[in-house]
Image (cartoon, rainbow, N blue to C red; front, side, top):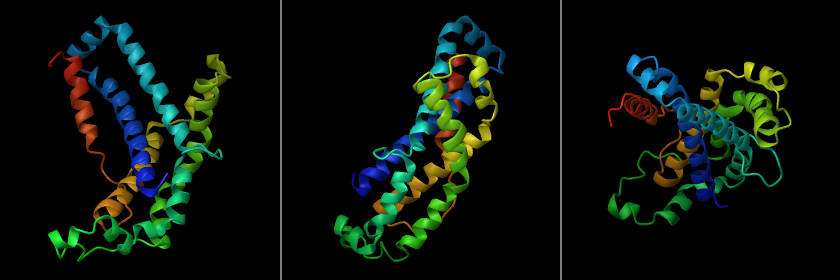
Length: 218
């Protein structure tokens, strides 16, 4: 894949994973309301299937992002590609892609800074503290519980889930998504990269829509 394809792919993977994560939490939050809880109980089988599917899919995404196989499209492979092809984020490359931008707005690049390998490494460092979590419990759960069913009894895999905290899932996914979003903004719009965790604004929409469904407001 080229750099544009890589950015769009990882952005899609992390957005999907975050949407699944917040969907899971949104359901748990919504049923604190009596009307929503009553609705969920009336359709209990559906919501059990829904929660199970969301939870399983979430770990598939996290496992795929943390894969380290030779031909995998993982986050580490994405990082390696971006560092190797740092010139794709240069001013010259941007103008090759968007040659008309200065004709439309001569001042478009006035405050833009284009990242070199050092800046890209600094951006990717946002993910560093989450690597062990993603490559340990999350990857093991994906591989041995869901993908290959090596562990099939609760006593065999229960300890793995006990080591997984919601805050760790959120922190890891937000870091990976933020990196991809910063790179998308730099690649497509020449935005200066300032390494920081971004807000996933779709979270509020997911919570609202889940509550509306359970409260039968649609």
